[in-house]
Length: 283
Ligand code: ARG
Image (tube, rainbow, N blue to C red; front, top):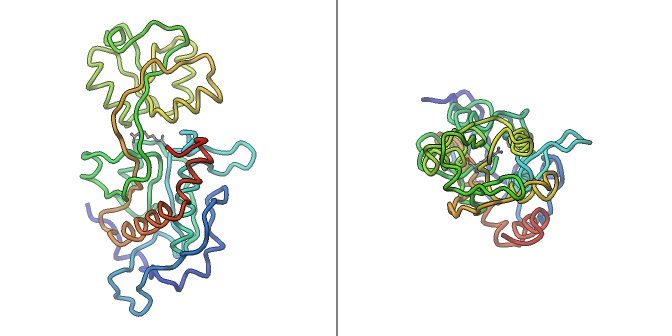
């Protein structure tokens, strides 16, 4: 599928925009230092190899499914997106000399197709696991976090991977996720129930509608600690996943600029401090 990059305006990834860094902001302000903005080097020519396309001039437009705490969720009071990913992309945008704006919440399984199609958002940042299947449609930044899956059930439940692999057991997941794939591959006999909303899924486990949920381990830990104290992680599954920022294949220089920012953030302690803020320690 061809996207409409030619109709979009090209901007320079250069220091020209560094002065607007103060505008950057996706919800909560980040913990980043501001030592290294605008370090791309394409200021001299508009046909420079470093230039990349943006949906909106001077702004990194982000799309996400905003029901995945602590990675991205809506702050009840401000109505703004908040979370680990929000801080990460905010700091990335700041380093690129760009403002940062979130589109309204989208269903998770629409994010990769939306980036592939182009024209609406520059990046999808949603604890998205880099997979071979998704790499057919979009590119990803270098990984920014390691993750695994978890099976969640009622506290005191006697369910195991073995008992759940039965048609009488409803195992819920968020549609289009790697949790969904894991159920398909590892619990082929279970009745898999993909839903849009993680909180609704966990509530369903709480009320006995579902026997268990398969979801990213950091989300399970966070949600159980903060809102679902009557649920338990009955198994941690070492899937060895890595999260990446999804970018259109038609926009390779945007990916490069994001990777540069991520590398700086890994090097200067910004990434560690965002991890500590959301997880209490580095992961
Ligand atoms: N890491 C999993 C995946 O990529 C789940 C991500 C869900 N993210 C979200 N914001 N709902 O499939």
